Length: 139
Image (cartoon, rainbow, N blue to C red; front, side):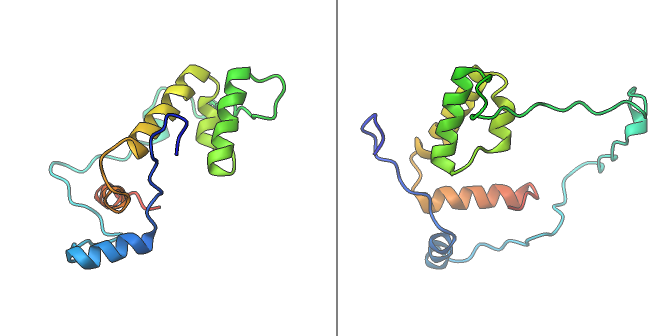
């Protein structure tokens, strides 16, 4: 239960999702097959197609560490929450921590989208899997 008093449903396991699919009937899905999209295929963008000189280094976003005493205190506190909930500091959040207000908003959005919806855990995972397959994003 959260501090707000709201019950938080645990994430569904893959076994729960498989069981749910078995009860509801199979959904035909072709894994790892390209999805045909209407319109012409996008042309891959090559570096020589840009105005960036070939010898120019690529910019890197510094990753903030929650253990860094020089880091913004708000960023350190938010990264501590991430580490507590996920067991480690996830790099995408460490990059966003360069702007603590944005990180706070992203974490709040994730909390609402994942836990603050009306879907049961099994259907929530099914939506994620369907979205991943549709967009060729396998995890």
